[in-house]
Length: 347
Image (cartoon, rainbow, N blue to C red; front, top):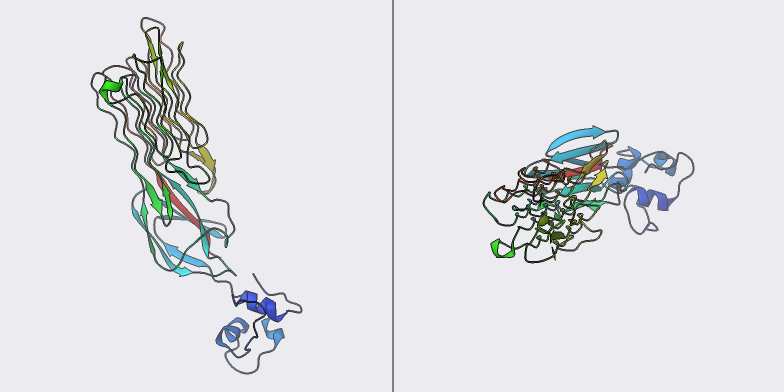
């Protein structure tokens, strides 16, 4: 803040100088007081402190840097270091806002479940002094990669989990992989993660379970569960992968497969962008009249496949889960990579 231009109190001066408690007796000749008054020598009066500011702001390097008014935004799309050279103070800025999105999971093959979105963690918007504290040091940044697609082979295996993204004390968990067609070929249940993978269809069961989201649990939640699958009357419909703001949709006996859960929009990079959508489930329906693919969730989720179309990959740097395969010999596509964004007031 800035001291008033009119009458000021000793407690206001202490607050400006980050001296606690504010009732502490002030030494008017102290270096901090002289610096605030901009008087290196001689007597100092309270009037010399009127309208003065001790504001110090965070100074940092790393990533791709953009300026938004009084704020700087550092965007990381690969591993790097966020280096704080000056930690600022309460009169200026001493905390940061962050967006940490993990890599998305991949969808399963053989009418599998959609990949779950990477964990989504954000504290934007927050005050310049009420976010995540930082000190003068280097903070390693880990940007989670999207999971590799499941191999292309009959009945195949589950999708894979995405990788974690990390900044300071904040870790977002990779999205869970989608389930496969049959339990004996890797398991139909979706895998747990930031958001859970959708279940794969299973001929031996009328429905199969999704993967859990927000695993491990954090508050607020970093994601949602995937959707159930269903097999009925020769029709197999995989569940959709969970997204940051919505669970994956359930497969239905008449089709379509479960849709991917929607992600969450945030304006921390500047304009609103939606991240961490789940992948759509894959499906098979015998004979003509197949249903259209199950769409992925908003925020980079890939569409689910249909016989004989493979599912779509999750979009890069969104943490989107990939769509599941829609055929016995179709492989799953890869999940979308994550990203890390750090924002702070610099003036």
